[in-house]
Length: 350
Image 1 (tube, rainbow, N blue to C red):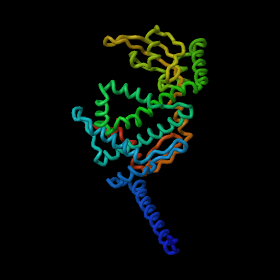
Image 2 (cartoon, rainbow, N blue to C red):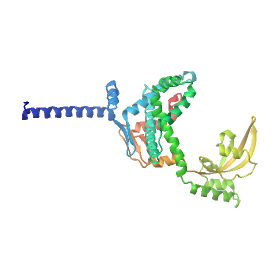
Image 3 (cartoon, one colour):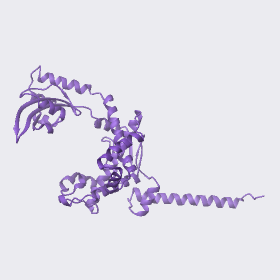
Image 4 (cartoon, rainbow, N blue to C red):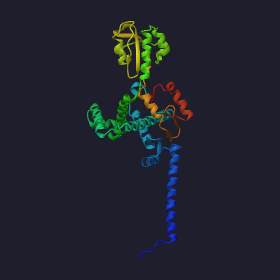
């Protein structure tokens, strides 16, 4: 007959368990400090991040993005640029310098925003009973395989350029793109552009029935950048114009005003000012009155504003009014603002 553990033995057991919990807590606290405050980069930290999914971002209602995922994508970006031979065009990428590390930080911010967007898109899609199955993803993969000749070539290129497997490609690129495409299709049936359509019809009446000056109406009411110049778009070839506008413009006579034209961007009324041929290429001089539609990107941005986002990584903050991650570090804010003027010869900023 076995003896029941006495009180001293139970106390020893409890002390051992408590000590284990203290050690684990201290370990997690130390690692968290290294990740979130000091951004330690070493083999030990990489190994820990592989095992423990420390959160980098939490999107309330849409999920969490791990530090491991962010850093994996950063490594893929680094590998992509370092695998390219830019010497032939007189350009180079070096992420090891102080400036290079800052440029890589810009890439990290872009990745954060893209991953947050992907999470929200997937959540919005599933709320509309949109699902992506393996068969649909494999169909998209087959199209990519056709571009590379065979599956092995595609897998080799993914590994060479990004260090990815085919499964990585499915998860990081194909799946999110399919969700975005299907959500965009659903958006078309949800959006209401009736107020915009009413406005463009009113403007059409002003320049046709009421015979008001086209440039004057464009200056007063057009929503395009050209409104500052009375709607003047200058000279354009057909290829330089959005297809719906180009098709109409090259079928008109000089001085003619078009009916309302609908495009993915909005509603257009165009006036053909002149026609010419330059170096054998036909060109048109147009004025435009433009009313912007609610686009998918506009709608998505408004939807994203509804999701509270917490960014745990040092140096970042969530701008809820813009629905985007931005730098909290003044030095990085300044670097980002001045980058275009100090980036000649570095293709990584494109």
